Every structure is written in structure tokens, then in C-alpha cells.
Image (cartoon, rainbow, N blue to C red; front, side, top):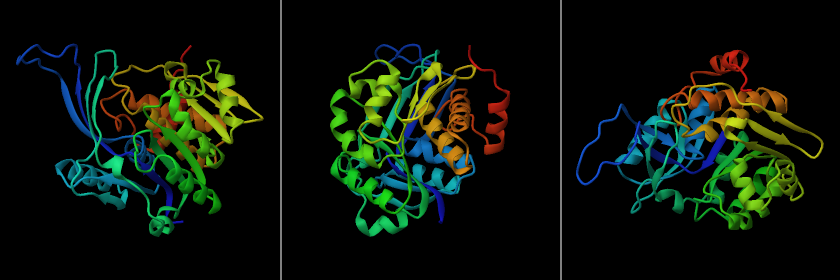
Length: 313
């Protein structure tokens, strides 16, 4: 295989500032400490972190033909990510988000839907897209053209070709289960936040929530739970992995970093618990800085942090 992972889906330019305690009234000005631009989104943030963790990565998504797209492509290439399958679409802007990061790390967002809504994967691209051991689909919920039957077809083809499939989504609502449920039989690692998983299932208890998705075809449920760590379940095993003690700066991209860490763990042959612990370390590192690519230095550094960080009590 040419790649360890093809990361397919939502690519966004994030514009972040911190700390933002309030928006100034009228035309007044407030001064803040940091402003950054990063490649983000449930695919974009994940592929950058996968690359920083040493994986051979391919980016598969869409941007516009604007200055935001130039930045996104340039940054992906900076991390040696193959961008040949990134579509540049005329007449639509690159998807982008303005994030005002509060002092406690919360991140109210202003999002502009753009090229990601028009992204699809033609069958003629399948051989190239599937030239990877792992296929990660990230961003269901904000992929208007790909969501639904095209995503089911895509994941079914991935499994037909013997690929490992990982999956995450965004902006899930109760009705999003109608999009997600047909995909579940083709998903090896179903990786939403617990809030998203609860909203779609209508259930509260984490064990019941996992059973809901396992009964509908998912092979493994991996739920991120913020400061409570994560929960991993198969039909035969269930485990909780605690979070690490960290000083939170910004929680942007923590879920994407968790996905990347888990994918890296899979490629290194780790068991489920070690994958989850490594993913938790990657997620925690991202929360220590501004933006979805903060904190992570390398696979070796993240492994060392996993071994040395204090477990949250």
C-alpha cells in the first residue's frame, strides 16, 4: 500500500483567537494574546495529526479556489501529506470557521459551509483513494453531497477491498442517525463523542449507547468523553480509559487528535486499550495549545507523554 491512511471528508480553515472573554461592543477593540490559522475539520485536523505521528497520509476532500484553499493545501504539503486527491472547486469558498477561544478553553464557533458541501468521490478515484491500509471518513453531517447513500457505497467498497474503516462525524442531531445507521455495518471503529452518540441513539447510559450501535453493525465503538476519558466497546469487551491531567488552553481538534492517535495505534499493532491510551495522550497534547495541530510533536514524543502523564483521578 502507498499510504497508511486515507483521510476523507471535511477540510476546513480555522481562524482562532485567544483568550476571548467578550466580543467588544459596537466598533470597539479588545486585545488578545494569540491568533492562528490551522487546517482543521474532522478530516483535516485528523490527517495533520496522523502525519505528525509519522503515518504516510493522503488527504481526500475539497476546497475552493480562494486564498483559504491556498493556505490549506500549502499546510498539508508542509507535513508531507499527499494532496493529489484534494479537489479544488470553482464558484464556492473553502469551508472555514472563526473560533473565539474562551479563557477556560471553550470554543464558540462561527462556521461558513463551503466546498465540503460539494465534495463527492467518483468511482474513477477509488483505486487511488483505497491505496491505504486504513480509510478514515470524517465529517458526516457537514458533507451535504457525500452524506447518505454515497457514503454507504464508499464504505461498502472499502470493506469489499479489505480495508480497515474508521469513522467520525460532526454536528450530529437526533435525526442524523438516519444518515449514520446504514453505514454502521461497514464501520470497524465508530468514533463519535459520547454527546453525539447519545443524541443519535436517544439513550443515556454509555453501555446502552454502545450496544445500540454494535447491534446495528458497528464492530467497535470508541466514544470520546472529554475530561472523563474515553469508552471502548465491542460485543465481547468493554473498557474505560481515563483522561490525563493537563492544563487546558483550547479544546479545538481534541476529537480529531484522538482519532489520529487511535489510527496510529492501530497501524502499530496496539491492542484496543493501548490504542485508546495513546489516542488520549494525543488528544490531551492538542488541548495544551491553540488549534487542532497544537501539542503533538511526533509519535515517539506522544508515546513518552502517554507513559509519563498523570492519569486524571
